[in-house]
Image (cartoon, rainbow, N blue to C red; front, side):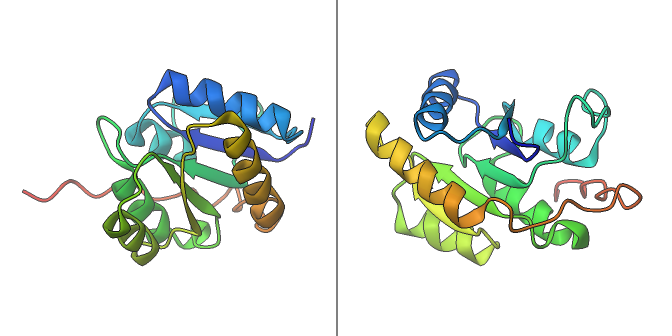
Length: 157
């Protein structure tokens, strides 16, 4: 097992299972941590309860981010990540069911490293994740422990 960690932010148990299977088939042995919405992703990245123990919840070296989720969507998470100086180089791959050009454009404008539409076929998903891993894993050191990400701004009224 690699010491690098992938954080998957996705609310669909079916998609999480398919991604786990595709990672295994691609022989990507990095630890996979999963959170089901954007608010949990921020808690995880900030190292707040229930994700405070970094031996159990290691800081990720790559984030796979769905867009359509409850509580806080992927665009809001991506925007927050890119406002954090210590996360500015973190690879964030938008992995979504959306094939809309507008979603891809917005994701890149907000700082996504890549935009991948989730293939429905397990073989295609395996190939896509293998390419993501070859391109993005190991490119970014984790931020220093003494500089945790900031608290999110309250939503506009």
